Amino acid sequence: MNSVDTAWVLVSAALVLFMTPGLALFYGGMVRSKNVLAVMMNNFAAMGVVTVLWVVVAGSLAFGDGGGIIGGFSLVGFAHLGHSLPGFTSLTASPGAVMIYQMMFAIITAALISGGTIDRIKFSSFLVLITTWVLLVYAPLAHWVFSPEGWLAQRGVLDFAGGTVVEINSGFSTLAVILVLGKRRGWPRDPMAPHSVPLTLLGVGILWFGWFGFNAGSALAVNDVAVSAFLNTQLAAATGLLGWLIIDRFTGSHATTLGAASGAVAGMVAITPCAGFVPPMAGLFIGLCAGLICALAVRLKFRFGYDDSLDVLGVHGIGGVVGMVLLGVFASHAINNSAPNGLVYGGGAHLMVVELLATVVCAAFAFGATWIIATVIHHSIGLRVSPEDEMVGLDLSQHSESAYSAGGMGRLSS
Amino acid sequence: MAQKLIVAVIKPFKVDDVKEALKAIGINGMTVSEVQGFGRQRGHTEVYRGAEYEIDFVPKLRLEVVVDDHQTDSVVDTIVNTAHTGSIGDGKVWVVPIETFVRVRTGERGHDAL
Image (cartoon, rainbow over all chains, first blue to last red):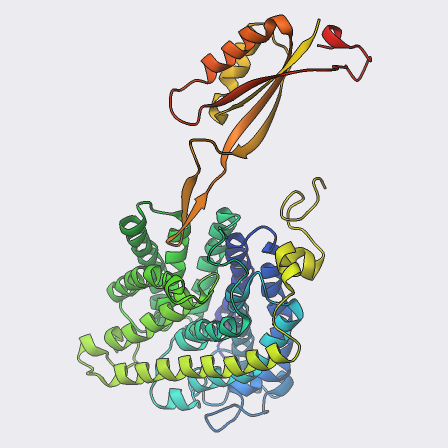
């Protein structure tokens, strides 16, 4: 075990954990003031629930010994970590550190779903949803792609830090949940503008900071690949930000701060699968594409009438697809000797084909399996709050709290 | 002597000018509050992630001054002249008769309570 690599993975784990409170601020600022605590609570609850699930059994289902479809019970309770993780033949960091690091990925991916379900999901049902979902959707997908023994990894699918497992998975799972859950009352007729864009900007700052751990940490070592991933994260965030502003400017007449923040996130989403595999100029280009495409993709919900309230599909789902497709174009053996060359470096179409396969398989599995879970919950304990509770706001109806003393249905003074 | 309540809804950035102008003509008390509303100016449009939201209510400042009857015209004129920009949305001023006016600390009434 290399102590420097282990230290880097542990620091990265802390950085990735920090992204979830960042996500809570990102989402919290975009909702109305009567629902801000509820969505932040969904994120914090994920930190509680998924941590327990992961150490007890979900981590083993993702990374334990298995046949490629699902990991077994060999790592249940983190008991038999020993000196190696199944399939990770060249791992130099501590296996325990890697399992802790991966725990943080599971937490934020579950938390991401709350961006689609805001303003109307029952808190208890959200807990049941993410519990079932981490076991039946996240753990298998993480096994397929992140474990070297997974069937997609075995087919040569590249995904550096979770374009499929985190981004496409959360985007298409959220779409499934919201189709079962239904629209917010009054959407899109009534205005539901963000109550505090500054909170959202602070949240994006924290996400941006944490994303260095998310991507550069995924090298699982302190080396040139980690440096590439770190650099590409910064580059794609920058061009994603600029790309979204270009769309803002030419379709809406103003460059918006929410657009800048959303674009930075879109850029980092798209670079996630590519971070340790592509050269810097490709990183710039991938972020720009994500900013441009996601800024247009978030408008689709108005055309098709699905209430993806905070654009989990539009930013994470679509951004993830952009990253996976462009990885097939720009992957470079010179940057990372474990990767084949993509289209532009003379590698032919093979990588593109497996990346597309992984994209379609993960999107379809996430959507289908999550739709079944959401439907079962909807017809048993119910996913949605009552119309009255929805109107009063979830902060008060689900948590007996008000975020601001004079806000929402809250008191006039403290 | 009777008193009048003068209420003005004006553009928020004009409040300091109006306050100074009123102090200059001897008015030494007023109440302001931040309010929202619309008149002929209507509201405005906000854009979040490409989605346009029509915001009907525009932030305004509501100013209340109590004066003796004979001061009414000069105070109204001062507010109107100072808050005037000439563009739509400058606001309104109206005058309401006061039935009773009392200073809480001393119980003084009418002119003495001013």
